[in-house]
Amino acid sequence: MKKYEAMVLSCIDPRFQSKVYKYLESEKLTGKYSSFAIAGAAIGVTHKRFKKWHSTFWDNLGISIKLHKINKLIVINHKDCGAAKITFKGRNFNSKIENEVHQKSFFDIKKDLKKRFPDLEVKFKILS
Ligand SMILES: [Zn+2]
Image 1 (spheres, rainbow, N blue to C red):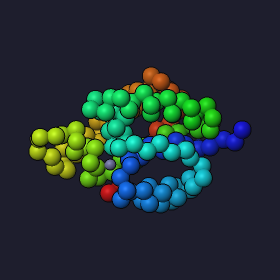
Image 2 (cartoon, helix red, strand yellow):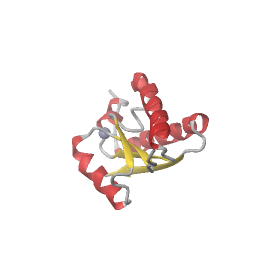
Image 3 (cartoon, rainbow, N blue to C red):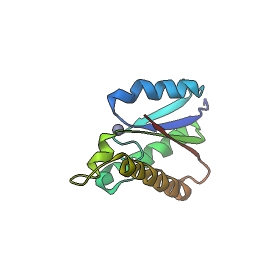
């Protein structure tokens, strides 16, 4: 079976699809990664507002590790993310708060990875 490099977790936002692709191309990863897109990327798979989605992400990651022999998870969040705003419904939202939401989601993924797939490398990126 062929070995691939990474699974990429990214957001469904239409404005960012080509940016994600170009970023991965610049990292020389074209054709070498599997892809998991969900609203909010790391926010969608960690924040309690989207709890139902979490196990789907971790199951997919497990399958990609098995099938594609990946050794890295690349997490690509982005600025002005609608999912980040949803987690702050009814409260004042600004770029400082948004950044905290992103950092918290990265921290939570790292924590879960340590438990579930301790050998997997992880890389975090925020596109703007
Ligand atoms: Zn988004």
